[in-house]
Image 1 (cartoon, rainbow, N blue to C red):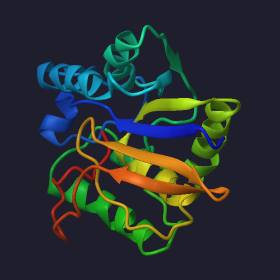
Image 2: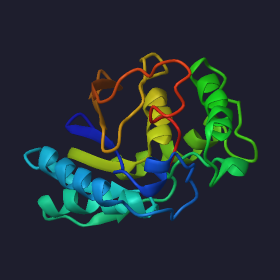
Image 3: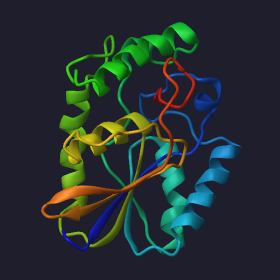
Image 4: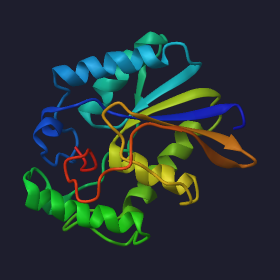
Length: 210
């Protein structure tokens, strides 16, 4: 695995993102016009990299984001089960400050170490990692070069933190933001993370899943 890099990218913008609607149940909404432009820009950004495989979650928005990346390298998009967004349960389809604050209360608990905190009727951080990390093992098995996975902001953040041993300061990912990990001394090391640390209490900064 020493010659592989894992490039995890968040999908492009959707109507749900633009309206701050919690949209986590696959297949979900497609990209909007801005999201399509973001996907094209992501493909240009990664065009010169040694990409050997492009994977996407079962969500339409992830597959639509991955398509131009794969096309730039003459590859097909491989759809992977298990790497979809954190399921919001009773908050699914809701918007507005009350719903987002309810989500953020659990989201913030995860980053302070309470991985058992659970969204109402939805998943805990442990639930997400238990399905996401084995899926990663599958796509990385025998891989080389840059392996791209288009997934979702909260899920990527939880998975990356686990791979890094929960020692790195993780950040919100903007639409089509990327996280790059590389092997180092038998472990994963962080090479790059797009995005910025959010302002405390800002429920519209891009942390809520959609």
